[in-house]
Length: 323
Image 1 (spheres, rainbow, N blue to C red):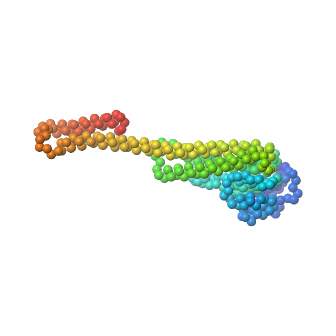
Image 2: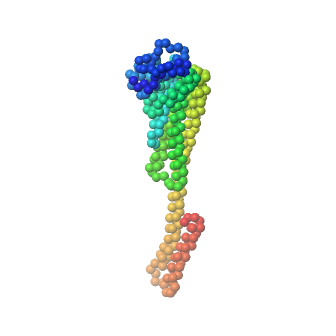
Image 3: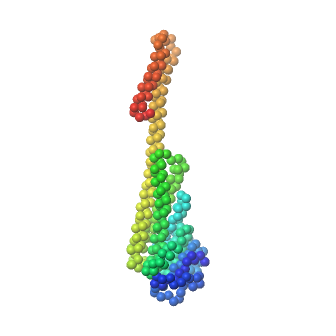
């Protein structure tokens, strides 16, 4: 049984750790609730939990697929939420999934692919019994807050890389490998931003939809806080997309500018070399009667004309910044 934790609480206080055979108590009063954490259960294992808590089969099916988009569904007096986690592996954002079942007296979380356990969340809440006394809806908030807070280290890491790339592109043009890597990184940002946008919708519904079961009015402000966090994550991802596009555009403009400089330099040197070529071409014509052929200073004059003309053209191109 992939039960990472199973605990019974009463009025925010831990009553006992639960084993697989005593997860549900028949003597459950108004202040009792159960918190179960599962990690990648098999269909049979999750079905056993579903029978104990009366989980809706459609929700159980979604929790097993582990490839669902973030959403909120109500099944009678039960609330079903799917959230997506994020973990940065090298240059790739690896998404995970956490499905959460919230009933009047229980909360069951099912994790797939997420490397971050809920141990820290559980320990923090158990140290705050007044908060835990709110029941499953507050635990739902705490888990979603933990998941969304995990977005920011991923965003920070990507942002640091983007800013370094933005600075380096001003000095050194990107090569083909770096450009492909940048496009791949931009694709990861866009994919992550779509998931964050859906998580924003989930937080918005939990904060404002009065028809959702098991969400008390006292807890709704906490979900509004989650919505604010997701909005900040979405805003930063939009900025990262703009930075990636800016780096690509800047690299293209700088490359065009460098090519323009090289083109102007080649044109300038071609013009300089055209002077001796033209003069040598004239004196190289095989005519019998050319006035300079009998002139003793003809050769020095031709060399002077070549060097003088070339120097004049060189000075002119240097003056206008082509050399």
